[in-house]
Structure formats: C-alpha cells, structure tokens
Image 1 (cartoon, rainbow, N blue to C red):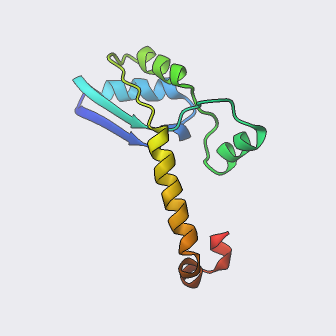
Image 2: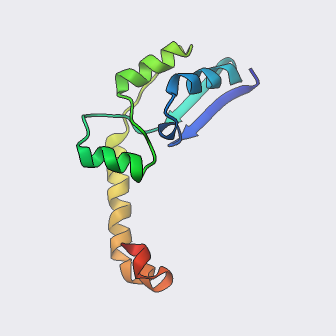
Length: 118
C-alpha cells in the first residue's frame, strides 16, 4: 500500500494471468488509490488468423471481453470500476498514423531500407 496510483498503457494484454496481476496492483495502492489501465479487450470473436497474429505479432495469449475485464477487476478488490471503450478514437488515430506512414514510404525506406518497411 505505497502508491496513490498505478498506470498501465498497453501492457496487461501481454500478461496471461489477469487476476493475480490485478490483485498485486490492488495491494500496491493506498486506500482510495486509482488504477488506470489502457488496454485491448475482445469486442467480438477473433478469426483463426487474428488469433495467430495476436499470439505471434502482439505476444498476447488472449484478450478478455469487457465483462471479463470488469469481473477480474472486481474479483481483485477494485470498486467503482469505470470501463470506457475508446476503440473509435483509437481507430481514427491509428488510421491517420498508418496513412502518414504509407505517404512517407520513400523517406522511411531511404533511412531504414526496404526490408524493414514490409
């Protein structure tokens, strides 16, 4: 119970055992402390190729659903859970970044080489 807050940005998805992880976070917080997690969650079933990419490219075994995430938080001792789906905002942001990356392909290849662009 040493910290006022614990913050995680896109890390928890890489840790398969969510409840022990969240229990550890709860123990680290002072009474009234806040846990902020920005992470992926499963919005709909994944295809076989998406599951493979999640494991091999993202290094995540699986993703909890919104309901599972909330249940894990509550089982770990968290109260007043707020779950805000920012998928629309992130989709716009990532799409813009991808467009900028593709538009600057020549510059990237000149600096880093063709094999790193693919």
